[in-house]
View 1 (cartoon, one colour):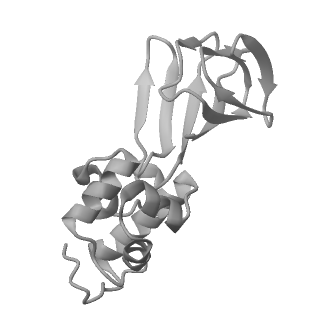
View 2 (cartoon, one colour; view 1 turned 60 degrees about the vertical axis):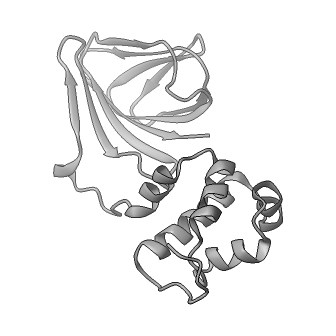
Length: 194
């Protein structure tokens, strides 16, 4: 990528990189002025790069990566391709833990530039699964019971949920999922990273 002033095209990796730079700045809640202050890159250059008027130099990208806590390869990988808008049912990863009676379907898997994901869990009657903590402390979770009865314990507080009920919270510590009753419990989990 060169900052040759010739302007960027409307498609391809330059366009995706420009969008990713806008997304990162927005995720941090920074104005162009604030990003310029933090990175040492002029506001004008940042603005032109985000509008695809220029392709940023390696030095500019390196400064932005330092501010965003990424390597250049991670930033470029995030801009390399966009996640598919439609995740077909036959392409969703399904994982089973037969020992615990748990099945997990990745309905909307994590992807660069997206902060949320959706999984579907199914617990057989009597199944009980405990987690020591979330992979990312403070992550937001919404648990919507689709069928059956489920007990979810978050931060030491048990919640009994029936079909149609939704529990939402930010998870900092342990959690536990138990299937209640004689039928499987099927539920959706929406996770939003902080």
